[in-house]
Image (cartoon, rainbow, N blue to C red; front, side, top):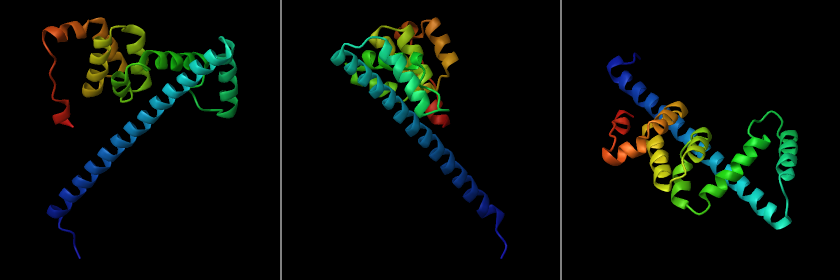
Length: 164
C-alpha cells in the first residue's frame, strides 16, 4: 500500500504543530513550578528568620547544605537564595503580580524586581515580557528606554499571538 503524499503532508504538519505546542506548554509548566518553588523557598527563609531571630548565616548554611544534597543542580547559591527571599518579599502582598511573574523565567523576574519599584510599571513589564516573549536583553533595553512611560502615551501593539 502506497501512502498518498497529498494526504500525508497535512498529517505530518499537524502532528509537528501539536508536538511544538506540547513542548511550549511543558516548558511553561516547568517554569511556573520553578518560579512557585522559588517563591515558597523565599517565604520559608523569611518566616524562619523571623521566628528564630536568624540573620544572614542561615542563608549561607542553607546554600552549602542544598548544594551537597542536590549536587550538580544550579540555583542554590547563597546569592540565589537571597534573590528568592527578595522575590517573596516583593510579591507576597501582590497576588496579581505574582501570577504574572510565574509566567516568566527567573532571569526576567530578577531584572524586573531589581530595576523597577513601581507597581504599575512592574505589571506592565511582566505582562509585556510574557505577551511579547522578550528575552532578558530585550527586557533590559525596554526598561532602559522607559517603555512603560512610552506605553502610557502610545500602547505597543504586536502580532505575536497571531504568529504563534
